[in-house]
Amino acid sequence: LALSLELLRSGREAAEEAAGSLLTHREHLSAAEAEAWERTAQRLRSAAASSGGSGCSCASGWSDEAVLRLLLAVHANAHPVLDDATASRTVGLGLFPAACLLNHSCAPTGVLSFEAGGKVLVVRALVDLRRGQEVTYSYLDEPHLFAPWRQRRALLRAAHRYEPSQPRSREESEAAALCRSRLPAAALGELEAEVRALCSEAAAAAEEAEEAAARGDGPLAPSAEERLGSACEAVHSLLEGRLLQAAHPAHWLAHDCLAALSRAARALGDPERLAYASMRLIAAREQVMPLGTPGLATLYASHGSALVRLLRAGRFSAAGSAEALGQAEQSLAAACSIRASCLGDEHPLVAATARALADVRQRRRQRAGGAT
Image (cartoon, rainbow, N blue to C red; front, side, top):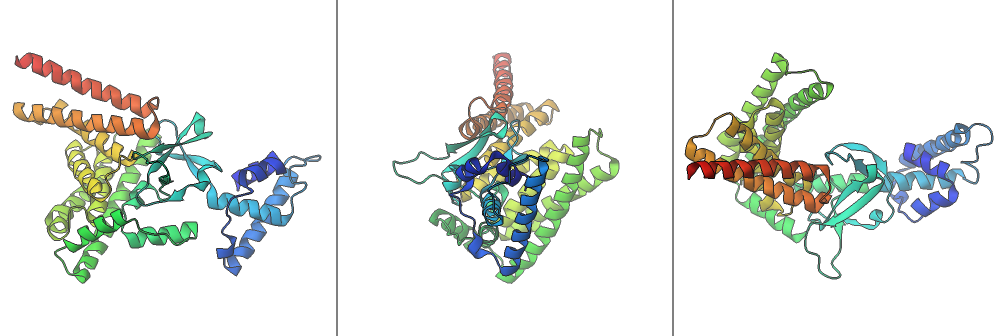
């Protein structure tokens, strides 16, 4: 609504240039939905007419029908704008007409990033593009991109009002994960319900801890720490004790467990579990879709940083320390390379990852010098 109001205020010509040629998906609305949107458009037009006081002309020349079309076009095409610092938090919505021409793919060839405080959207290639090859990106956020096809299809149908198709590469990887399941479908369904419940509890516990950290509340309260620890233990136990005994390591239920465990371990400050979960989730995601996405970079960075914390805490033997340093360097180098490809060389995350990588390499050089 706020974005549509800003377009109304920009004037008819500017608004038509931005949104006039965009799809509205109006034909897919039910009668009740269409009526609700029409009422909203009328109220928006009234708000635009009165917001500037007497003499405001931002709604002049706009009929209710024109405002309705603008509102539907914005709703169907606006992009969530991510923050500059971490490229992970949604800070607003933007309308970028050229990017609206890009199609969705569950095996995307491009990725979006934002610059200049969200005023500029940049599309970067995830693969080496051939001449004439289509540039696509994922309309789904990255965690949903690794959900089973039935869930991805339902999400795309509901949010974008079209019938999606499954890329052959994703169809084959999903079939491979399914065919190696060692449980009947009914038993796997029961296990899925248990996974969903435990992952929901882990996510809720992690969210509580993350909100407390954002408020600057200091160390976790004992009750919150206990809740997170119990959630981590329950998910880890289910994953190792039952799920990975019955399903392929790249099965979407394994993805869900590992993602929940990684988030909860990060919130808890448990580097050992974080290193375990992030490395296994990297392997699972690369089996399903071997693309250097921002989320994959985060997992590599989490794995490398967790190993560094364990090294500082003296959790490895002398031989183990050398191996862990090598793994940390490899993970941070992968994170740095992927982030530079997806976000650009000048992005703050790239600089921060490069500094962490330099510190690990310096530590390896010092260790090698001491050994000689």
